[in-house]
Length: 223
Image (tube, rainbow, N blue to C red; front, side, top):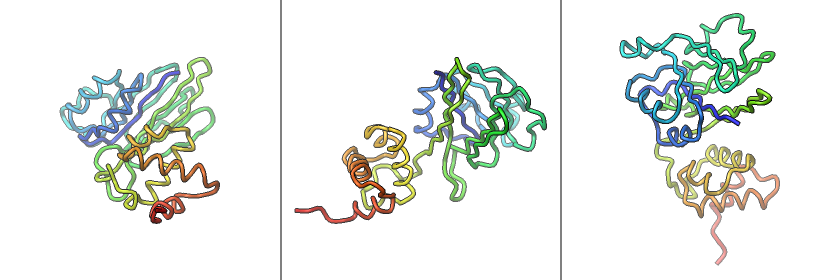
């Protein structure tokens, strides 16, 4: 199985959480608005990189193509920054990657998967900070996309009572996906004890949701 790290609209900022995710990838795709040559160079240190030019990429990015059409990890891939510039006919492609809107989108049309990984650069308004990892089974050509929600500024090492319901919802989703306590603690900047408590509450209370976990965590402990 191959892993493709897919990101867009980093706008000059490569978060450490993003770098850690990309370290485990065989290839990286960047759908534009990189903004700095330094960010591009850093990505190339992590894995083979395929990138296209975004509307915010200036003269330094003249050598980057506007579109990309390549076979990567056994997949025929088309990439462009703006969704409006995707050709009407993408017959023969397995994956179409784009960015620009800063909004995560995943949809399938026939045999082709369309993916916008969102933005994992500076947060814009209240939009989530996201990227994606595509797991590719070479023998079958199957694609499984995993959305990666990146920890927000100031979210690290929060006290139990400060965890938002939205953050807990993302954590519980990762529990359902089989993530370990250690992985969850690192991803969300939690103390391991807090991550263990969240997982234990969720797994030992069938039907409980994020709001329920938050309520129980706020309850005083028995003496």
